[in-house]
Length: 488
Ligand SMILES: [Zn+2]
Image (cartoon, rainbow, N blue to C red):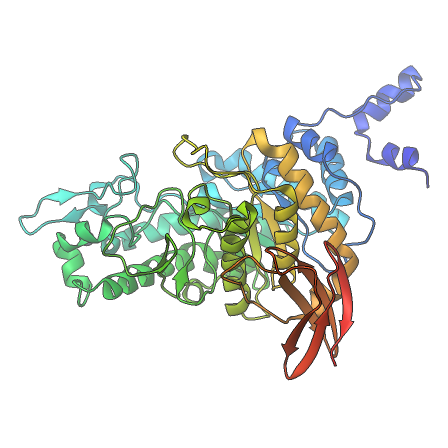
């Protein structure tokens, strides 16, 4: 069937009628929301089928909810041709309209046999809703909030929140039970829940030590590890009871996850935008980087997929002395991705949040900080895929949508050629060299390995010998492509 005929099928019904009535030969192109137009202009239809791989998730797609059902279907089909999933948003603050839109999107995805994906984020806020009952209380009975996450966020006491569970559960279950009632599937739900609930960093520990309720509930509160453990146990319980369980109780096979929560080696190699260094937090030092001791929270949340955050945060560049500016970004981002890949059970999918533009937190970029090259970013995405990352979720502000979409989509579409490897292969390496040098990643099936080699540093250009499970792999200096080798 010619493309023109296919497009006729996708045409909104109203446009089709107008064409039939007027006999106008030129079809009126559907008017897409700006963010969808940008995605379509910066992506191409897939050359290889998705073949069981997760669809690509793109932040700009959140702007693709429209009221016209026919146009919504066109958007969903056009995105799917490019391997990109439409995402509905559950916003309990506008629950009726949000539910209507979400059910409509899910029904189209069901009809087309596509994964049903939802953004639960707006419905995950806020446990700490400003109610005085959620505050810390000092020995004299004075109530106080912890403002270490900013004045706009009234962070209170972790041990006062149980009364909020019923309301917070309802904010999620309202949507989930409606999907069930309508006979709709639900395949993937994600959140970006972070600035709410108890958190052990910044100066929150100081506030907790002044609180009589925290003192009573946290054994050994004077030790940071004890405090961290108590806070993370509570945080995991909140998210499990009010977010994960309401979804999994009705959709046990759904993928459920949240930004920045993933299995790891006990350390956190990056800092989120609201976090700042306090010297009494246990950490290890790597040049000027400080990697904080992190609690193993993932398993306690019940999440069924992991969501590491792999961003070029501005300050990362200043932590390291590598001459090659690209390796400063690459090194840190590969550390984060490899950490998740190495420590996540192979049965748990990893969907990483990714981004290319330097993330400037305070609006004052240091002129010494050099943007990562597009080449390095795309190579990084390939190495992530060859180290256990199953899916990519690109976040970006609207102004960066075009470039961000294009870069991640180029890698995603090209990677579909290797779906068999990506679906079944086992990573051969999670190593991250402490100096610029060739980076090698690979996926093994039997004695064969899909390999990618990216050369940094002065040692490049020679074959590299690598031991894999007692066997030898000789990696030739083939740049910027994947190739298959046999273990000797
Ligand atoms: Zn407290």
